[in-house]
Structure formats: C-alpha cells, structure tokens
Image (cartoon, rainbow, N blue to C red):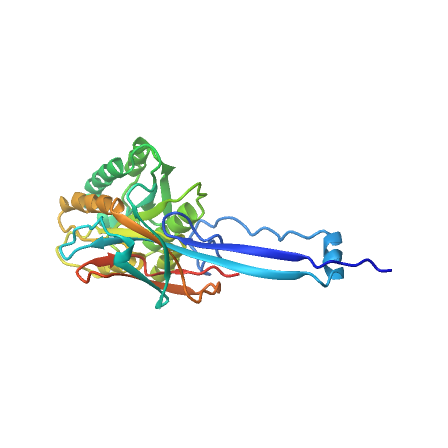
Length: 340
C-alpha cells in the first residue's frame, strides 16, 4: 500500500521595508539604468542550484501548498518649518496625515529624529569653474564636517566632482581624516556632477552595510554645470531615491543672479526632499552649512502602511501634510517599490 503523504504547508514571509533613515529596501539594489558612471562595480553571481534530490521530492509531492504574505512598511524622514522658515520640533503624530500614491496610508509610528546616526556624503565640485573660490569652499566644508560629525555614530565621506568621481576620504567619523580628504581635492578639469552624485548614492550609501537605523544625506557643493557625465540628471535623482538619500545643494555661483546651473541644483534638492542654498557672497556659504546642520537635527520620521501596495518595482509618490495650514512639510517625493 502506498504511503500516505501529508500536506506540507510552506509559508514564505517577505519583509519589505522602505526606510528613509533607519534602513533600505531589502531588494533596493536593483539593476541601475543602462548607462552608468565609472567605475563599474561587482558582478552578478550565478544562481544557486537546488540539489537533485530536493527537486525530485518537490515534483513527487503535488500536495505542497505555498502561501505568500507581504508585510509592507514605509519609513520617511521629513522636516517642518513655519512661514518664516523656522524649524518646528514639537509636533505630534495627530498633526499629520500621509498619502501614498494619493491614497490615505495607515500611520504606524511617529517620532522625532534628533539623534539618529548620520551618513553624510560631501560632494565638492573641483572643476576649473570654481578655481578662484575653491580655498574658501574647502574651509567652509571642513568647518561643517567638524560640527556635524562628532566622533561616534555619525560618519561622512568626501568625493570630488571632477572629470570622474574621486573619493579622497571614505566613510569615517574622524574629522581629521575628513579634513585631509577635503584638502586633497584640487580644482581643475571638467565637471561630471551627475556621475559623482549617482556614484555616491549607489556605491557609497546604497551598498553600505547597515547595523541599525541611519539617516542618509549628501551635500553637493557646485555651480550646477555638468559637461562630462555619462548619466543624466534624472538618472542621478532616481538613484538618490533608490538609496533614500536627501540631497542638499549649495551653489558656488556668486554672480548675484541665478543661472541655469542653479535651476539644476534646485531640481535635485526638491526631488529628494532637501534644500537648495544660493550664497551669492562667499561669507554666506558658512551660513548655508549651518542651516543644513540644524535641519539634520530637526527632523521627524513616520512609518506607515500603504494602501493597495503591489511589489511591482513602480515609483510611488509620498505626500505628508500638516493639519496646520501655516506649516510647510518637506520630504522626498516618493520611492521605488521592490520588484518580486
């Protein structure tokens, strides 16, 4: 008599998380756009082969049932200011409502993010166009890093936006090493700003192994002009969204009038939930760095469950609205769902 085969229930639980500061999608490191900046990184490992015995067993047992359960939680960091641009730090969860893809989302947690560890990338335009004020920019950047990266949990890295992205200091909490990294930058050559932003988001932040929740930010110091990049502006913005990075831009244009490059910097900052600063006088650059430092310590974070979520790799929009019409909420515009 044949042996009776009892049904086997296999429950696969896929945990999906979109985390602006505390973490990243488990499947966020998807294939980048067809055109990617140098240097190329990594290779695709061959898929693991199941043992022949296991395959035969699966084929023989037709009673196997597979259930899939998706647990979705999106986490977003945001900033709130009043009409005068002052940061509001004492709000509660009842002050906000969240729309995910234009549908109300279920709020699961809310907290003030004042002490969450930071991972900050400083991208400095080292092209010929900034040669006459490069020393001042270096001094302002070093002052910022000394203030915002105390020894401990916070870390930063330095990348030069020259013809190719040049890492002069990798992630560290040593302000001495970071200062040396900034001093190593040399002005000259063309500008591959989009490549540098793309590279910093993908290779330095998205692929960074996390041991706990963090907030990711990039400070881009440039005139916004790009003449050598392999990727486009929108591809760089998309990679920042995948890496869940907020980008703050500081214009090095001191002409007194906003140029085409300044509009590029505004687009990058607005799309990622950051701010664009235009210090038309050199002494105002230190003020811009101070404002960024204050904002990084004046943020909130919400976790919510989207309605009608589908893990299809599609871009989904985020809107966080304050019940007080006099307050302005600034956050990233959306995220990419993982693709199963």
